[in-house]
Image (cartoon, rainbow, N blue to C red; front, side, top):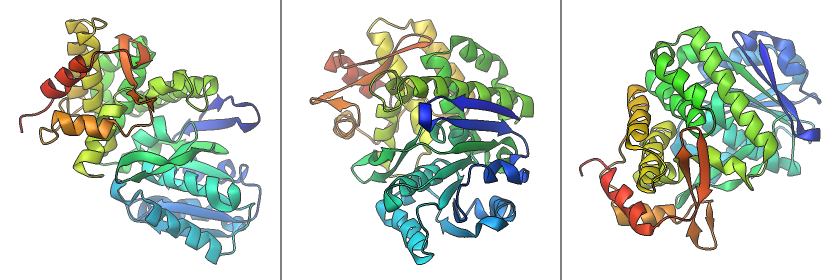
Length: 361
């Protein structure tokens, strides 16, 4: 097991990474202060790992909240089921929520923890590659709205993140590839050596080589921990973690949540961001080709769906958390390994990217 610290002063916490961590009962227990625990999971993960987590928490009176699986259920209505269960069980402020699942469960359980009785402790136990390398770390929580993704939420840090890499053994291939989008992102925005490593080792990741996956997860979490420690509430550098997300969130919202996986939409969005960066003279054609090639090799889409017109894209992107004073700020690449947040781009160039980087309708 490796332990990465996320340094946030009094809100600091460890990120544990290793195989078989769900078998180590004391790992969870030492981050539970009270006698009550609520395990929030979904209908897919529960049959796989709920019993294992429950067995390690018998002294904590665990209750279970099993939600439907899918991005389309990341709503206020479904979130209310968590509150219903907590209230029915008369859970108090010392109740610890455990988020057992992927990014949707982590975001929803975290938001419930931030809101229930104005804040109770929670622990992230991510079971997908995407949640292990990204959404479980950093304290972003929330739900979607029909008009925009993740528009309702809160910054709320967990007490710990427990990443059991063995859970990836049951992850479908499509979900594994989706997680690789966020792994690639770290190489693009701040770690060019990691990007080069991914170009050489991507086949190992797709083949679920345990050593390669452990390295990629650790390197990704280290990158994210460093960024979050420097800018917890996204007032500066943390926004660069959203490379491709303005484009990708528009795809997810426009198609309907769940039609494309989050990582699939972000992958296409990163290619679009790279294309716009090239149009601005920041990336070379060779660099954009490298980016597109790596994402394609990860079995991810490199074009947005042709069913979304340029006008519809612009409409959806206008409802984005990075819009400031009516201007859409985008995360673009100055070069491989250096991202920038900017609203200083010609609208015509953005429209050219939106028009050219879509599949044929």
